[in-house]
Image (cartoon, rainbow, N blue to C red; front, side):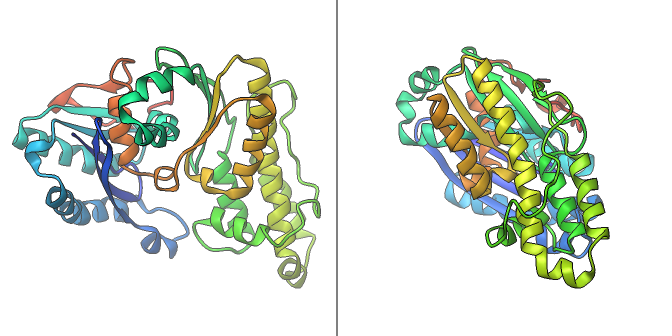
Length: 346
Protein backbone atom coordinates (compact mmCIF):
# COMPACT_ATOMS: atom_id res chain seq x y z
CA UNK A 1 0.00 0.00 0.00
CA UNK A 2 1.02 3.63 -0.55
CA UNK A 3 0.74 6.23 2.21
CA UNK A 4 -0.01 9.67 0.77
CA UNK A 5 0.85 12.91 2.61
CA UNK A 6 -0.31 16.38 1.49
CA UNK A 7 0.49 19.77 3.07
CA UNK A 8 0.99 22.21 0.19
CA UNK A 9 -1.25 24.90 1.69
CA UNK A 10 -3.89 24.87 4.43
CA UNK A 11 -5.04 21.23 4.41
CA UNK A 12 -3.29 18.53 6.42
CA UNK A 13 -4.13 15.28 4.67
CA UNK A 14 -3.20 11.61 4.88
CA UNK A 15 -4.48 8.72 2.73
CA UNK A 16 -3.74 5.06 2.10
CA UNK A 17 -4.05 3.73 -1.45
CA UNK A 18 -4.06 0.05 -2.33
CA UNK A 19 -3.26 -0.51 -6.05
CA UNK A 20 -5.03 -3.85 -5.90
CA UNK A 21 -8.26 -2.58 -4.35
CA UNK A 22 -8.43 1.22 -4.49
CA UNK A 23 -8.42 3.96 -1.87
CA UNK A 24 -8.36 2.31 1.58
CA UNK A 25 -9.21 5.49 3.47
CA UNK A 26 -8.51 9.22 3.69
CA UNK A 27 -8.19 11.72 6.51
CA UNK A 28 -8.16 15.54 6.23
CA UNK A 29 -7.89 18.42 8.67
CA UNK A 30 -9.23 21.65 7.14
CA UNK A 31 -8.03 25.09 8.27
CA UNK A 32 -10.77 27.17 6.63
CA UNK A 33 -12.25 28.34 9.93
CA UNK A 34 -8.82 29.48 11.14
CA UNK A 35 -7.99 31.56 8.07
CA UNK A 36 -11.49 32.94 7.51
CA UNK A 37 -10.87 35.83 9.88
CA UNK A 38 -7.89 36.93 7.76
CA UNK A 39 -9.62 36.63 4.39
CA UNK A 40 -6.94 34.23 3.13
CA UNK A 41 -4.26 31.74 4.13
CA UNK A 42 -1.63 32.93 6.62
CA UNK A 43 1.48 30.75 5.97
CA UNK A 44 2.85 30.83 9.53
CA UNK A 45 -0.50 29.77 10.99
CA UNK A 46 -0.94 27.10 8.32
CA UNK A 47 2.44 25.47 9.01
CA UNK A 48 1.75 25.51 12.76
CA UNK A 49 -1.54 23.71 12.15
CA UNK A 50 0.21 21.04 10.08
CA UNK A 51 2.64 20.45 12.93
CA UNK A 52 -0.23 20.07 15.38
CA UNK A 53 -2.49 17.82 13.32
CA UNK A 54 -0.29 15.43 11.34
CA UNK A 55 0.29 13.29 14.44
CA UNK A 56 -3.42 12.62 15.15
CA UNK A 57 -4.12 12.07 11.44
CA UNK A 58 -1.37 9.47 11.21
CA UNK A 59 -2.63 7.76 14.36
CA UNK A 60 -6.03 7.35 12.71
CA UNK A 61 -4.42 6.06 9.52
CA UNK A 62 -2.29 3.49 11.32
CA UNK A 63 -5.26 2.33 13.35
CA UNK A 64 -6.91 1.42 10.06
CA UNK A 65 -3.84 0.17 8.18
CA UNK A 66 -0.83 -1.23 10.10
CA UNK A 67 2.56 0.27 9.26
CA UNK A 68 3.93 -3.06 8.05
CA UNK A 69 1.49 -2.95 5.12
CA UNK A 70 2.90 0.35 3.84
CA UNK A 71 5.44 -0.25 1.07
CA UNK A 72 5.91 3.34 -0.12
CA UNK A 73 5.33 6.90 1.09
CA UNK A 74 4.25 9.55 -1.43
CA UNK A 75 4.45 13.19 -0.37
CA UNK A 76 3.75 16.51 -2.06
CA UNK A 77 7.07 18.29 -2.62
CA UNK A 78 5.67 21.19 -4.65
CA UNK A 79 4.26 23.56 -5.66
CA UNK A 80 2.95 25.28 -2.55
CA UNK A 81 3.87 27.30 0.52
CA UNK A 82 7.44 26.45 1.49
CA UNK A 83 6.85 26.18 5.24
CA UNK A 84 3.79 23.98 4.72
CA UNK A 85 5.51 21.71 2.20
CA UNK A 86 8.40 21.28 4.64
CA UNK A 87 6.04 19.96 7.33
CA UNK A 88 4.71 17.21 5.10
CA UNK A 89 8.12 16.33 3.70
CA UNK A 90 9.77 16.06 7.13
CA UNK A 91 6.91 13.83 8.27
CA UNK A 92 7.32 11.58 5.23
CA UNK A 93 11.10 11.33 5.64
CA UNK A 94 10.79 10.46 9.32
CA UNK A 95 8.30 7.69 8.61
CA UNK A 96 10.36 6.41 5.70
CA UNK A 97 13.44 6.17 7.91
CA UNK A 98 11.54 4.50 10.75
CA UNK A 99 9.72 1.99 8.53
CA UNK A 100 12.55 1.53 6.00
CA UNK A 101 10.33 2.18 3.00
CA UNK A 102 11.01 4.43 -0.02
CA UNK A 103 9.82 8.05 -0.04
CA UNK A 104 8.80 9.64 -3.35
CA UNK A 105 7.97 13.25 -4.12
CA UNK A 106 4.82 14.04 -6.10
CA UNK A 107 4.03 17.19 -8.06
CA UNK A 108 0.76 18.49 -6.58
CA UNK A 109 -0.49 19.79 -9.94
CA UNK A 110 0.23 16.51 -11.72
CA UNK A 111 -1.68 14.72 -8.97
CA UNK A 112 -4.67 16.94 -9.77
CA UNK A 113 -4.26 16.02 -13.44
CA UNK A 114 -4.63 12.31 -12.63
CA UNK A 115 -7.37 12.73 -9.99
CA UNK A 116 -10.34 12.24 -12.39
CA UNK A 117 -9.13 8.66 -12.95
CA UNK A 118 -9.29 7.62 -9.29
CA UNK A 119 -12.96 6.61 -9.66
CA UNK A 120 -12.12 4.62 -12.80
CA UNK A 121 -9.55 2.64 -10.82
CA UNK A 122 -11.96 2.12 -7.91
CA UNK A 123 -14.56 0.62 -10.25
CA UNK A 124 -12.20 -2.09 -11.56
CA UNK A 125 -8.65 -2.02 -10.13
CA UNK A 126 -7.48 -5.09 -12.04
CA UNK A 127 -8.58 -3.62 -15.37
CA UNK A 128 -7.40 -0.06 -14.78
CA UNK A 129 -4.36 -0.03 -17.08
CA UNK A 130 -6.36 -1.36 -20.01
CA UNK A 131 -9.32 0.97 -19.43
CA UNK A 132 -7.06 3.97 -18.87
CA UNK A 133 -5.23 3.26 -22.15
CA UNK A 134 -8.54 3.51 -24.02
CA UNK A 135 -8.96 7.10 -22.78
CA UNK A 136 -5.56 8.32 -23.99
CA UNK A 137 -4.63 10.79 -25.29
CA UNK A 138 -6.61 12.76 -22.71
CA UNK A 139 -7.42 16.48 -22.45
CA UNK A 140 -7.58 17.89 -18.95
CA UNK A 141 -8.64 21.20 -17.42
CA UNK A 142 -7.22 22.08 -14.01
CA UNK A 143 -9.13 24.89 -12.29
CA UNK A 144 -8.13 25.92 -8.77
CA UNK A 145 -7.39 28.96 -6.63
CA UNK A 146 -3.80 29.07 -7.83
CA UNK A 147 -3.85 27.45 -11.26
CA UNK A 148 -5.83 27.35 -14.48
CA UNK A 149 -4.41 25.12 -17.20
CA UNK A 150 -5.30 22.99 -20.19
CA UNK A 151 -3.05 19.97 -20.63
CA UNK A 152 -2.86 16.63 -22.37
CA UNK A 153 -1.82 13.18 -21.15
CA UNK A 154 -0.39 11.02 -23.92
CA UNK A 155 -0.29 7.24 -24.34
CA UNK A 156 2.86 7.09 -22.18
CA UNK A 157 1.07 8.99 -19.36
CA UNK A 158 3.27 12.02 -19.93
CA UNK A 159 1.76 15.45 -19.40
CA UNK A 160 2.11 18.33 -21.86
CA UNK A 161 0.94 21.83 -20.94
CA UNK A 162 -1.23 23.32 -23.70
CA UNK A 163 -2.25 26.64 -22.13
CA UNK A 164 -2.44 28.42 -18.80
CA UNK A 165 -3.56 31.74 -17.39
CA UNK A 166 -1.64 34.88 -18.28
CA UNK A 167 -2.50 36.49 -14.92
CA UNK A 168 -4.99 35.39 -12.26
CA UNK A 169 -6.22 31.82 -11.90
CA UNK A 170 -9.97 31.26 -12.29
CA UNK A 171 -10.38 30.34 -8.64
CA UNK A 172 -8.41 33.39 -7.60
CA UNK A 173 -10.64 35.59 -9.78
CA UNK A 174 -13.73 34.14 -8.08
CA UNK A 175 -12.25 34.68 -4.62
CA UNK A 176 -11.21 38.27 -5.42
CA UNK A 177 -14.61 38.96 -6.93
CA UNK A 178 -16.25 37.64 -3.78
CA UNK A 179 -14.12 39.95 -1.68
CA UNK A 180 -15.15 42.95 -3.79
CA UNK A 181 -18.77 41.89 -3.30
CA UNK A 182 -18.34 41.72 0.48
CA UNK A 183 -18.68 37.95 0.71
CA UNK A 184 -16.87 35.60 3.07
CA UNK A 185 -13.83 33.34 2.65
CA UNK A 186 -13.43 31.15 0.68
CA UNK A 187 -15.19 33.24 -1.92
CA UNK A 188 -15.83 30.81 -4.78
CA UNK A 189 -18.50 28.74 -2.99
CA UNK A 190 -20.17 31.95 -1.78
CA UNK A 191 -20.38 33.28 -5.34
CA UNK A 192 -21.77 29.93 -6.54
CA UNK A 193 -24.46 29.89 -3.86
CA UNK A 194 -25.75 33.37 -4.69
CA UNK A 195 -25.40 32.83 -8.44
CA UNK A 196 -28.04 30.08 -8.35
CA UNK A 197 -30.74 32.73 -7.78
CA UNK A 198 -29.24 35.41 -10.04
CA UNK A 199 -29.43 36.32 -13.72
CA UNK A 200 -26.16 35.54 -15.55
CA UNK A 201 -27.09 38.01 -18.30
CA UNK A 202 -27.80 40.93 -15.95
CA UNK A 203 -24.32 42.45 -16.28
CA UNK A 204 -21.97 42.33 -19.27
CA UNK A 205 -18.53 41.43 -17.94
CA UNK A 206 -15.62 40.69 -20.34
CA UNK A 207 -15.33 37.03 -21.33
CA UNK A 208 -12.31 36.65 -23.60
CA UNK A 209 -8.63 37.34 -24.14
CA UNK A 210 -7.49 39.45 -27.08
CA UNK A 211 -7.06 36.61 -29.62
CA UNK A 212 -10.07 34.32 -29.87
CA UNK A 213 -7.89 31.59 -31.41
CA UNK A 214 -5.62 31.47 -28.35
CA UNK A 215 -6.07 28.80 -25.69
CA UNK A 216 -4.55 31.04 -23.01
CA UNK A 217 -6.75 32.36 -20.20
CA UNK A 218 -6.93 35.83 -18.66
CA UNK A 219 -9.06 36.97 -15.72
CA UNK A 220 -7.47 40.17 -14.37
CA UNK A 221 -9.56 42.40 -16.64
CA UNK A 222 -12.71 40.71 -15.40
CA UNK A 223 -11.88 41.55 -11.80
CA UNK A 224 -11.22 45.18 -12.76
CA UNK A 225 -14.52 45.33 -14.63
CA UNK A 226 -16.38 44.16 -11.54
CA UNK A 227 -14.69 46.84 -9.42
CA UNK A 228 -15.70 49.57 -11.88
CA UNK A 229 -19.26 48.27 -11.95
CA UNK A 230 -19.50 48.30 -8.16
CA UNK A 231 -18.12 51.85 -8.00
CA UNK A 232 -21.10 52.99 -10.08
CA UNK A 233 -23.60 51.43 -7.68
CA UNK A 234 -24.83 52.47 -4.26
CA UNK A 235 -24.46 50.06 -1.33
CA UNK A 236 -28.22 49.50 -1.46
CA UNK A 237 -28.09 48.65 -5.17
CA UNK A 238 -25.23 46.23 -4.59
CA UNK A 239 -27.15 44.49 -1.84
CA UNK A 240 -30.28 44.27 -4.00
CA UNK A 241 -28.41 43.04 -7.10
CA UNK A 242 -25.77 40.88 -5.41
CA UNK A 243 -27.18 37.60 -6.77
CA UNK A 244 -27.24 39.01 -10.32
CA UNK A 245 -23.70 40.32 -9.91
CA UNK A 246 -22.50 36.90 -8.73
CA UNK A 247 -24.29 35.07 -11.54
CA UNK A 248 -22.95 37.42 -14.23
CA UNK A 249 -19.41 37.42 -12.85
CA UNK A 250 -19.33 33.63 -12.48
CA UNK A 251 -20.72 33.27 -16.01
CA UNK A 252 -17.91 35.41 -17.40
CA UNK A 253 -15.28 33.23 -15.69
CA UNK A 254 -16.83 29.95 -16.79
CA UNK A 255 -17.69 31.08 -20.32
CA UNK A 256 -14.00 31.50 -21.00
CA UNK A 257 -13.15 28.10 -19.50
CA UNK A 258 -15.84 26.34 -21.52
CA UNK A 259 -15.01 28.05 -24.83
CA UNK A 260 -11.27 27.41 -24.54
CA UNK A 261 -11.90 23.78 -23.65
CA UNK A 262 -14.17 23.33 -26.66
CA UNK A 263 -11.51 24.91 -28.89
CA UNK A 264 -8.85 22.53 -27.53
CA UNK A 265 -11.10 19.50 -28.09
CA UNK A 266 -11.88 20.60 -31.65
CA UNK A 267 -8.18 21.00 -32.44
CA UNK A 268 -6.92 17.78 -30.88
CA UNK A 269 -7.50 14.06 -31.15
CA UNK A 270 -8.19 13.38 -27.48
CA UNK A 271 -10.28 10.37 -26.51
CA UNK A 272 -11.49 11.77 -23.19
CA UNK A 273 -11.82 14.98 -21.19
CA UNK A 274 -11.29 15.47 -17.45
CA UNK A 275 -11.95 18.28 -14.95
CA UNK A 276 -9.93 18.68 -11.74
CA UNK A 277 -9.02 21.22 -9.06
CA UNK A 278 -11.00 22.96 -6.32
CA UNK A 279 -13.27 24.88 -8.69
CA UNK A 280 -14.30 21.55 -10.29
CA UNK A 281 -16.89 21.23 -7.51
CA UNK A 282 -18.96 24.02 -9.06
CA UNK A 283 -22.12 22.47 -10.54
CA UNK A 284 -22.54 25.17 -13.19
CA UNK A 285 -19.01 24.62 -14.50
CA UNK A 286 -19.48 20.86 -14.45
CA UNK A 287 -22.67 21.11 -16.48
CA UNK A 288 -21.12 23.41 -19.07
CA UNK A 289 -18.07 21.23 -19.62
CA UNK A 290 -20.09 18.01 -19.64
CA UNK A 291 -22.16 19.49 -22.47
CA UNK A 292 -19.00 20.34 -24.43
CA UNK A 293 -17.63 16.81 -24.00
CA UNK A 294 -20.96 15.36 -25.09
CA UNK A 295 -21.01 17.51 -28.23
CA UNK A 296 -17.47 16.40 -29.07
CA UNK A 297 -18.36 12.75 -28.45
CA UNK A 298 -15.73 12.06 -25.76
CA UNK A 299 -16.14 10.60 -22.26
CA UNK A 300 -16.28 13.21 -19.50
CA UNK A 301 -14.48 12.51 -16.22
CA UNK A 302 -14.70 14.81 -13.22
CA UNK A 303 -12.66 14.36 -10.05
CA UNK A 304 -14.78 13.25 -7.10
CA UNK A 305 -15.51 16.00 -4.53
CA UNK A 306 -13.06 14.54 -2.00
CA UNK A 307 -10.31 14.67 -4.65
CA UNK A 308 -10.86 18.18 -6.03
CA UNK A 309 -9.26 20.21 -3.25
CA UNK A 310 -5.93 19.56 -1.53
CA UNK A 311 -6.00 15.89 -0.57
CA UNK A 312 -3.58 13.03 0.00
CA UNK A 313 -5.59 10.47 -1.94
CA UNK A 314 -4.60 11.97 -5.28
CA UNK A 315 -0.96 12.17 -4.12
CA UNK A 316 -0.83 8.45 -3.38
CA UNK A 317 -2.72 7.60 -6.57
CA UNK A 318 -0.44 9.75 -8.76
CA UNK A 319 2.66 8.11 -7.28
CA UNK A 320 1.30 4.80 -8.53
CA UNK A 321 -0.29 5.98 -11.81
CA UNK A 322 2.88 7.79 -12.91
CA UNK A 323 5.19 4.95 -11.95
CA UNK A 324 6.29 4.45 -15.56
CA UNK A 325 6.07 8.05 -16.80
CA UNK A 326 8.81 9.69 -14.74
CA UNK A 327 6.39 11.95 -12.92
CA UNK A 328 7.61 11.20 -9.39
CA UNK A 329 10.86 12.11 -7.71
CA UNK A 330 12.43 9.06 -6.06
CA UNK A 331 15.11 10.98 -4.18
CA UNK A 332 14.23 9.39 -0.83
CA UNK A 333 15.78 11.14 2.16
CA UNK A 334 17.53 13.56 -0.21
CA UNK A 335 14.15 14.81 -1.46
CA UNK A 336 13.70 18.58 -1.22
CA UNK A 337 10.69 20.87 -1.45
CA UNK A 338 10.18 22.70 -4.74
CA UNK A 339 7.63 25.47 -4.07
CA UNK A 340 7.54 26.63 -7.71
CA UNK A 341 7.03 23.32 -9.51
CA UNK A 342 5.06 23.55 -12.74
CA UNK A 343 2.41 21.17 -14.11
CA UNK A 344 4.70 19.78 -16.81
CA UNK A 345 7.87 20.11 -14.80
CA UNK A 346 8.51 16.70 -13.29
